[in-house]
Image (cartoon, rainbow over all chains, first blue to last red; front, side, top):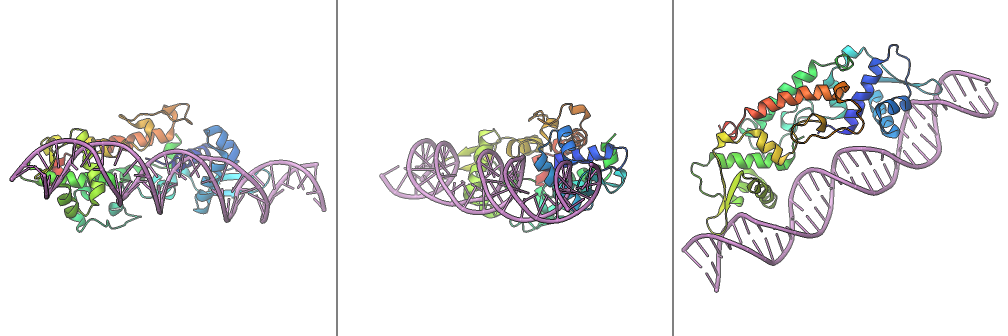
Amino acid sequence: MLSKKTKYGIKALVYLARQEDRVPVQISVISKSENISRKFLESILLTLRKNGILGSKKGKGGGYYLLKDPKDIPMTTIMRLLEGPIAMVPCVSLNFYEKCDDCPDENACAVHNVMLKVRDNTLEIFRNTTLADLSD
Amino acid sequence: MLSKKTKYGIKALVYLARQEDRVPVQISVISKSENISRKFLESILLTLRKNGILGSKKGKGGGYYLLKDPKDIPMTTIMRLLEGPIAMVPCVSLNFYEKCDDCPDENACAVHNVMLKVRDNTLEIFRNTTLADLSD
DNA sequence: CATTATCCTACTAAATCGATAGGAATAAAG
DNA sequence: CTTTATTCCTATCGATTTAGTAGGATAATG
């Protein structure tokens, strides 16, 4: 299940992508429009900024804005940043790989093999979907 | 992320599917073979039995056994039973549907639409994969 | 009746989730 | 230079979920 953090993060990014110019948008504006707790959204936007997706400006007229063109931000990037691994088990994760304690041989593991298939399919979708696609 | 419960459950089912005859297998045998905590596995097998996947026999020579042919047990059934929804958001779930609090219009929601696509793909895989496939 | 197994309920420690609180830092406007 | 508006940052918190554990009840076998 997708966390609210990720869901809210995506919604906020879509909101920013739909802005015509790159003028900073305040947290409170997004939070009201998308029905997201202001403080919670604040922490989400902060991590997006710290990871190079958003820029920010303090003080009056400040807010957040996209640093890149929406079509250059794939879902894989957003998901990995906010949600973590895309795979359902760590042993089939590309970016968050971890060996299973209980499993002596990955290639012989039935779970491993189905989940590999699922990951490939999901990854394919996320790779081919950018923030621009979401914003249409 | 897949819970250990689901992962262990699948592994145990595969173990049972690989048995030649339908003789009951004791929890402790499976737990040792698959490196799963005995007590934890006990509770997992219990829910599988309560949901018509496994049969059980008490006392000496007792244990758990599959009630159906492995090829008649699709991953969808196992997943929904142990893990819950297959979808990443409740608003695109077939069996565990729930409306989002924050979302006034599902069809206009960017998150909804990507996740619908992901669900379709994942579902397709799980529908076409049975316990028999996992056991090969 | 003794042994061997599942059955069942309840409990628990640790982690994660979804926030919330409150002030510091900074930028703009007057 | 002061006020106001905003992000920045750290810390905390209650609820829920996860991954078990404990211990006895129940039933089948010999």
